[in-house]
Length: 188
Length: 292
Image (cartoon, rainbow over all chains, first blue to last red; front, side, top):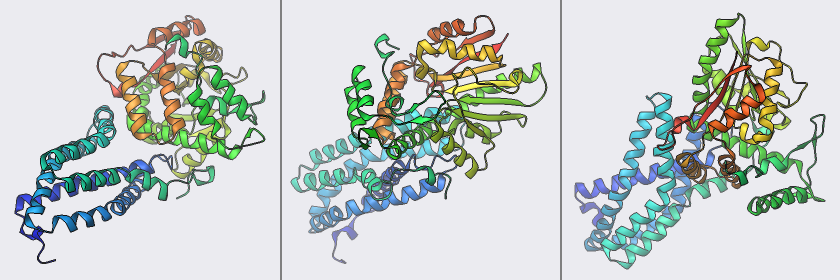
């Protein structure tokens, strides 16, 4: 492990990886929240959303761990190999991070804004972001593939993105597939 | 609403049937499918075909699950779009006008309340004042029971009762201080039943009404499609959501139907929301009437 070229990355490289990590964790948590949506009918459901977010991150981790291992095995072979992946990572960050930023800023604004502003942000920002996310994810990977011009990056990247996009479905299947019955409502 | 959409059905419309006393009766899957196919809705018929049945009778438990799943998702969408806040902002004015005319507690009655999310949210907010009581009625006993359980769980003071808004025997205790509301009901009633529905308000002499429904337009349709695709997990939710958009009516049409029902008994208003730009906070707008 001590020989991994990962440790020789400069601070910009670590920043790119950190930003990507924030983006994917935000996506994974949102997937879990979406999977849990519409299960309890309550006015106050923050705890249910938090549980959903955690489950989304778990599901995403399960989906992505095999790809992470494959990526590590390939990218840590040499500094040059890691460099190819970092070029692709920079493109991904350029595509994904703005969406994450938009989401984060909007999230902060809705907590202090009047209801009309919240309604508009929810519909026009969050609604659009969630709708576009799979297309943006694939487009980002396509751009990274073009920049890297590397078969390994392309294959591992597209398989990873596709696996990651299944997070909502997996979360729903594992934890939220049972239909809600009348006796479930109002029960903690 | 396009004329050809007037006879279109939402899937939930064909899954629930009641006898003249309002008691639930079994629904034959083949009949539900045939109703949808007769109105050219083969996709909807295919969704109904997947609902479990025994001897062609839809299993009650399976239908219950569908109703709850769809309404629970609708509640989250309503929350997302801040529909309760929209309703409350309109009701504040109506409540104030009723306060000016008479004294005593005011009752807001939500007809076709479903699981009562909007009403529970408004009641819980306290925005209309401490002298306002809330009641939700729906002909669907399952949804009424769900609403009761949810209100009780969060200690929200709303009474939910089973009842039919079109029932000629429906009565209210104190009509001078009663405001009738609804959300997403008008397009279910359609042009044929709206005049009669509002005529019942006139016969009861309620103080005011505000019936909210989607304001159709290109941005509303586009936004609704995107939101349903992105946030609704149930296929029937998506189908019925899209059908709601198609069945919604323009403000001038609603006003005309209202005049047919109440004549000059109420001062009517139905905002024409500009459709050239997106206005999510006005996704629903009220057909309002204040007793003259």
